[in-house]
Every structure is written in structure tokens, then in C-alpha cells.
Image (tube, rainbow, N blue to C red; front, side, top):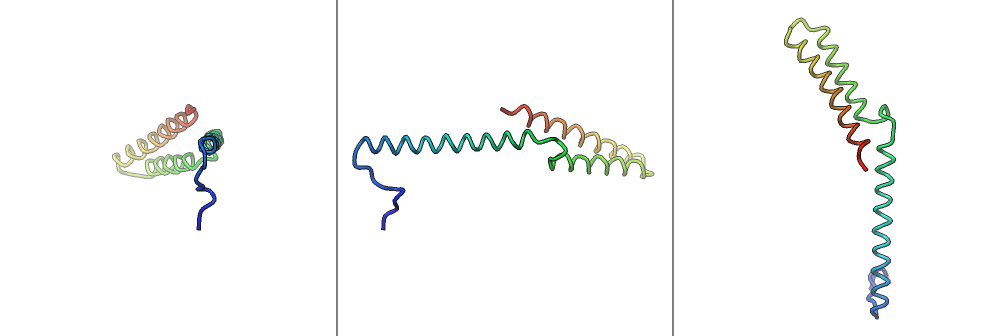
Length: 99
């Protein structure tokens, strides 16, 4: 049994045609991938998982700093909140800057 997509070309012209079709398929797939990447990058920030994770960490860090009696735990809470906010901002700017 032979696979119709893997037919053996009988001439140089048919080989060139198959090569052209394969290149066209590759270009179309690359275009589809780029289009999907742009769609994801252009979403508003509040619709991303990274945003909500950063919010959870920032709020959790500030709550732990506010309700902790230990000075080191307060510092760690503030640092965690700041790093979450900075990390999200940096990651989002990288996504927006991507071609």
C-alpha cells in the first residue's frame, strides 16, 4: 500500500513542483505561527496569567508584611511584592517588544 502524499515524482518538473508546494506550506505555517504570537502578545495585560500570578504574589507579600510581627518577615514581604511587580513589568515589556 502506498501513501498518496509520498508519491515518487517521475520527472524533474514534478520534483520541482513538489518542492515548491512544500516550501509554500512551510511559509504558510510560519505565517500562521507569527499571527498567533502577535495575537497573544497584543492581549491586554490583565488577561494574562502572568499578571494574575504577579498580583497574587504582590498582595500576598504585602499582606505578610502588614500582619507579621517579625522585622525580617516584613522585609521579605515587601521585597517579594516589589520583585513580583518588577518581574511582571519586565516580562510584559519583552513580550511587547518582540517582533
